[in-house]
Image (cartoon, rainbow over all chains, first blue to last red; front, side, top):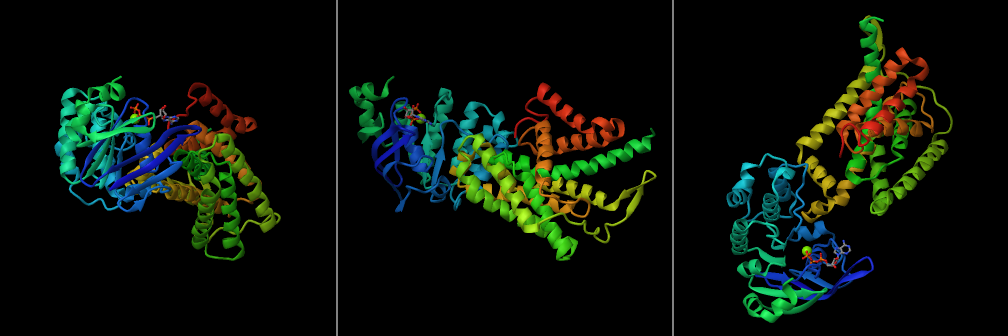
Length: 233
Length: 288
Ligand SMILES: Nc1ncnc2c1ncn2[C@@H]1O[C@H](COP(=O)(O)OP(=O)(O)OP(=O)(O)O)[C@@H](O)[C@H]1O
Ligand SMILES: [Mg+2]
């Protein structure tokens, strides 16, 4: 469904992606794992069209993504949930969700406001409040909900559970599993192997802008040398 | 001085305020959304006035047709300006915005000199808006009442549009985080064009409204942009409510200044701005 082929990208003069090749098949949950500054976020931003790649190819469901602006990528069915939440502060919780639903290309699908509220009752309770008044964890829920109500075919999820309390992390595990079951393909960028292992089937390890390893997530989890070398701080 | 005089002068101030508001509104709106401080915004007002003069004064079109026609023409020009000149420089430093938009001040002033030439007569007031009504024992021009109503109508319309419609929520979301808005599927380029066009159209409307009461000159663009800047500084750059209140403050200060301190009427406005900058530099209504 998504295929990156030797993608390179740079911020100004510093080249951050050195040639990323990976693929995510329809219905899969794939984790992009790596340390601080490895290039995970940059990879997702490049797919989304937020950072034009300096080389390589990106294909999504038969379409070439390189050169498309983010809104065009979104309308092809790619959703993006950033690590830093980016809730629209001037809008209420509900307006954040409805806006995402309205501007999505097709938008029809299993994910509705009601379903998001059902999974995250805290959002439902505060639906009329300003987006900025939510706690950090609730903003993470809203960011994910906003990504879901657009009913994308592929969701790019950056550090889904970073900074969340353990009990909330467990909630997110359940939700992400449910997302996968609902037919949305997922590419997670995460430092948290423990979380990734609970939701993903396959993983890539990225380091210094290069893919260093690809395997089943359980195989990565068991490979202590690999984990120590690329994933622990 | 009796209460009637004071109240009457308030009405005069309201008239000044609403004329200025029609310029400050688009200036602050475009800045709040696009992040561009458009020096040439007053020149769009001037262009609206020239077009209004041509449509209403020369071509003798109906006033109620000439008004929207001038506004729409200036709005379309705004769309073109945004598309071909401002879009390539958003990411650059504000200094470039100022240089480019100031360039358009000069270009537009020369363009109207070439296109329209010298000074004009003031066309007659549109029938129905001519004459005066007696307010507080004095005559007040019906046309000036109409300008007040037009300013208020634009304020209410803008508020409804931005606060109550999904287009408005889209604009506010994009203004607060353009990148995130684009990843949801909002064509922010197109949105910016429309916002800028709307801002320009309001300025064009303001200019066209001035035609039956004021001689337009190529210099009017720079004169009015300075007042509009003062208003947005007082109200808070990028904030529409701030621009509205700022316009009221400047309009009333001008009107009462003439009454109480005729020698320093202009000074009063600058003094208010200086005090705001000193004690609340972000403006009375901070933020966008
Ligand atoms: N806006 C930017 N300008 C310049 N360099 C950047 C920018 N954003 C990221 N970088 C650099 O690019 C490299 C990759 O960053 P990236 O954010 O993709 O890493 P990451 O794997 O997502 O890390 P983290 O786990 O901290 O989120 C880092 O060295 C970072 O310093
Ligand atoms: Mg990151």
